Image (cartoon, rainbow, N blue to C red; front, side, top):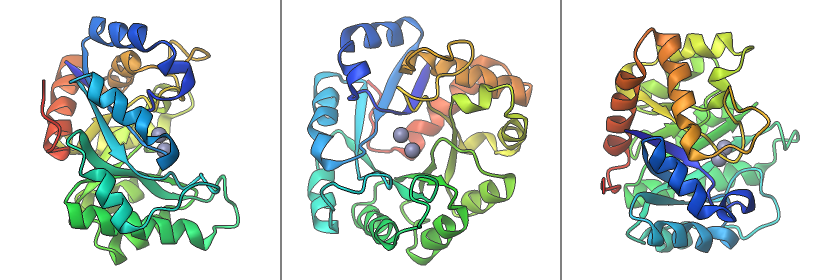
Length: 257
Ligand SMILES: [Zn+2]
Ligand SMILES: [Zn+2]
């Protein structure tokens, strides 16, 4: 039993093959997946997936890369997060890789998401790229440790992981951990305590070895878990069990079906 803690099943390359994607998931023992929101304009696609399938959950949030889209305030996020299948707020955070000018609107939007998460007591899904210091600073300033959450698709250093862990956050690894060049990330995977570990695909992106070049999908989270298991010198079964338990511990509104 495995859970994909972060995917984008509503994106065209996956939703067009919805039945096949879900069938392969079931075939590979991936029992649940969290479909993560990137903007409000496409939220209905995610909610639809979660309504059609008992084993899919949804989040509500606007990705820091999306500049020209509906800007949510706290009230709007809270209203949308009241849906029974919405188990998290995000993805949110900062991304100075795609927005090298480190715009103020990203930080304002991130603060709004943290405040909403505190008010509805749902965990945060945090994206950070080339912005770790500001991400951690805002997490502290806004009290992100109160709702807690996950640093998704983690690619930062052990020091950054340590600070996120200190705030009570979970660390989620994607297919990047399986890449040949990712030795330092595998060091971080060794360091994260077992009870804070999650795995994800971030599908349709970041396809793990041995499927690089193909469209990623939740079934492949097995290969992410395998890479984490190998790095830690543990069995796939042990990593599958602990990351599944961690998922339902963190996303407490997600009921296993
Ligand atoms: Zn992300
Ligand atoms: Zn994502």
